[in-house]
Length: 221
Image (cartoon, rainbow, N blue to C red; front, side, top):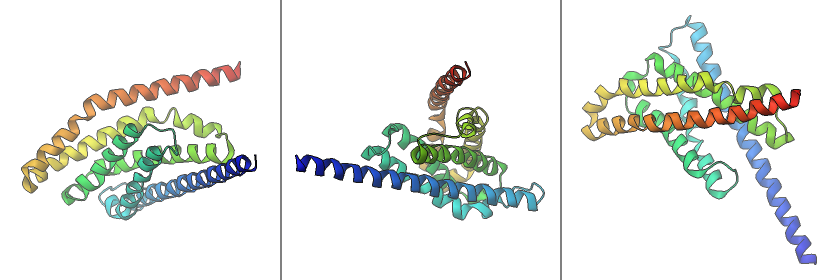
């Protein structure tokens, strides 16, 4: 009997540690994306809407914050979160493609406006997502505005992000061809994966939104 109690206590302690870690991870990620957005908006404000300097202002932080999303793949693999492993892996890798596979290798596209629209869409989406997770883990509930934003902002942010990402890849193609033929066709193949993947993920988001809206309707009634 004592060993059973000891095992249960140890499991509870481990669970508390994991919860604390996940809260900390989400809070730090929230702050990181907040810094990316703040730097982008300050640059746009100070230059009266000129996006040519947004890359230089945000890149040092962006590449770190986005690369740290690899931890989410590990979280899913270890079962620390309920997110499906393959979905998480694909979403993180698609972002890393734009960071390390496009912008890191093709500096000629850094001043294009699609970089600015892409990171603004990413930043707002991630701020909502990480605040949602952190609130839910810390308190067991989520403020109404954050829940509403999570299930509605994607209507604008998701198409905006996808269009920006594809535009960046398209802008990189002429320079990719000069780097290596394989790299050129790799980017084309990567862009082609958006065709089957984009509608599936968007449909999933709409289903989640419908469930949320039905729940809100029931609360009001």
